[in-house]
Picture (cartoon, rainbow, N blue to C red):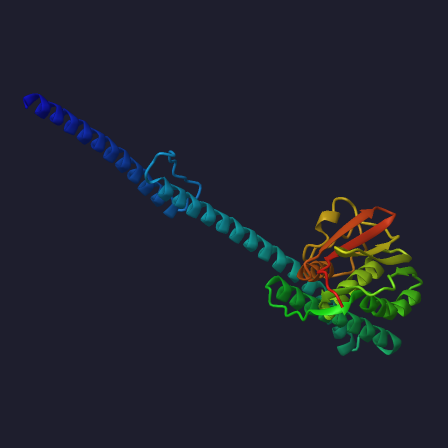
Length: 308
């Protein structure tokens, strides 16, 4: 009996030592977790809790690390948003203040009688054009803000995209001819049904054509639609000055104006709006360009296997 009792004591002592070791290990981990949490609370989101696969509290460690990483990602996004907001405000200040100051200058000259006769009429005309430019800029700005905030309401319908495109281009032919633009329009005759917001689609095409007329400094334009069972592609290209490789990746960013590559008459919102409207149709827009040879815009819109 004494031998069994002695062995039992040894076994019990071993169990107690094992439990004490485990408790000590868990206490060390809890202390480390407490230290990491205090560090994270103080703003150091780079801290992580290391855990072994056999640790009993590894799930807690993983959850803490995930929370820290999510918080760090949110902080980075917030800083990026703040920087983007500052850039936006700087751009807006320039794009509004410059033409507004010029507009006030022309109107002051008229109001104070500094100019008379035909010169006065010319000043009024210029002031009107600058006021129209400001109005157009503000309208574009509000539209972009609504799109960026996801507040734009779309009305998608099943429509023949080829018929819509023909109607849009028919309205542009007189404008192109008045600007001495040579044009080629290639639209398939057969029907091609798609889910589309007709106003948004019209704005997409109008923005790209306006961009070509205003910025390309070319005299030729080609509009082409290619279709298959998976998608349709809209291709608009010109023979103008083109866009440099330095500016090309940024042309769809808000308020971005590549003055060295284009004529710099716009407000930097047209292509940004176009990209948002294409995205609303689950599509993608890209641009290709060669300096002094021209620019090509390519829009890809998915087909939903609609039957009529």
